[in-house]
Amino acid sequence: MGREFTEKDMEIFNKLAPEAGGKNMSSMGHPFPFILRPVSHKFAESEEDFKERLTRLTPEEIEYLADLAMEGKEEIRTLEDEDSDSFFEILGEKVSAEKVEALKDKLGIL
Image (cartoon, rainbow, N blue to C red; front, side):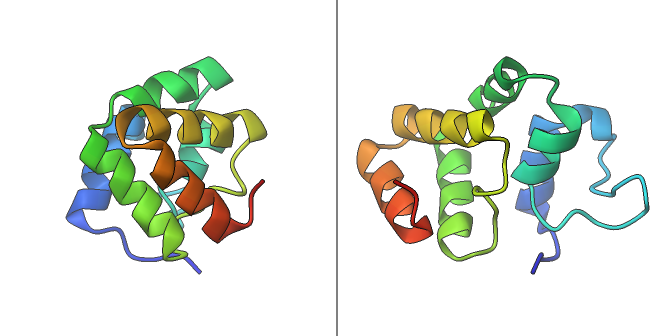
């Protein structure tokens, strides 16, 4: 259910995982279908590391990821639990509590 990364997706992915060297490919050679999941599962070394990576994003970029998640084009539910919590926290800080509630409601997250 993934998608082709747009130029904007690659900019965000490169900000979150610069060690990927500008490639959005798994070690098996498949393109990642999402931005946040590989950062959560493959690149971030801890909950704190993931959160620090998210703080690199502008409010517009974090909102863009939230909008993709609302459209089913980005995955939040399969992140490590602490990482999804961090995403919602940063979204609330940089965008709004209303955006957090709308996204949680859309995803069926309490």
